[in-house]
Length: 449
Image: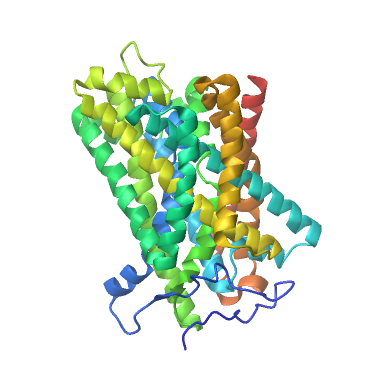
């Protein structure tokens, strides 16, 4: 039996049954070949993980990676690796929730909590998506300025055009959206592969950097950047996004079919997130090889890094590739952010408006504050605005992570697909660590103002 666009039979642990499917225009639209071999099925399920992975390599992460590499060499590579493993676990739980319950995370909250609580969670999530979108818009605008000398305010306004791109591709089929995202990831990876080749980092130092060291805990400055990397690891909207887009596959509506779908979706997201590990590590490695041990160890600003790469590496190609990767990163993240905006609005309050209008509203919420700050403070205002966006994301993160871990560990809600006890223990540990680190980072941010 195959899935249709009708709500699945609710599990008894939910307060109410699902009243609609997630992203109805693409729900169950991608066929999964029955009776095919492992690789054909894996290819059919491949895609959602890469849409999620772009949130882990967005412009908001670049500053901490640049600062970590420039100031402390390769030491913080272990922090990037650990944060990536945390992300793999939480995204696997998001996929499990979506496939097993037939609900995305927003719908699961609506079907579990009271109306006032659901409304509050929705408002917090909308604010977080707008903040995340703000970081991506600014990142793409900075890249356009670096590449073409375009004034920052013009670049911010141009980013609204991606709404038309998403609408066009989604109308053609969800596979086209996934293909564009994968293509941009390959461009980013290719750009940084060349950057690393130009920088000639020592292989031994890179390998040792992936080994965790107690020095990170003893050095307050190093610990601060490490917490910045860990604290901004999981983007809240990615959990809502992933729990929805895994349902674009038309897997069998049986216990065996769902179990198979969970397995392949987990493989997809785990492999995809390794690309995020490579890119974040590549940014840190490039910064370590180029700036660490020089007079430029304090470099943490994207503009400064772009300006210094060419003279330090001896070719203008270095700066150009850096800007190209930044543009691809910002554009990729805005594509997935608009999808997440649609998911949370429909999931939390069951409000359906035309996709073009929803995406335009989401984008304007991000563009308007960026334009106002740039008009008042000039281009220098973009830096503090990026920091503010990351603070807002940190505030919202526990409101996404803790419900996800609770739902997937509840046998009444998940039935036979409840997370194994070892995953539940690990997930709660990760949730508490991420929550605690975000609280600490917020405290440091506000006390340093």
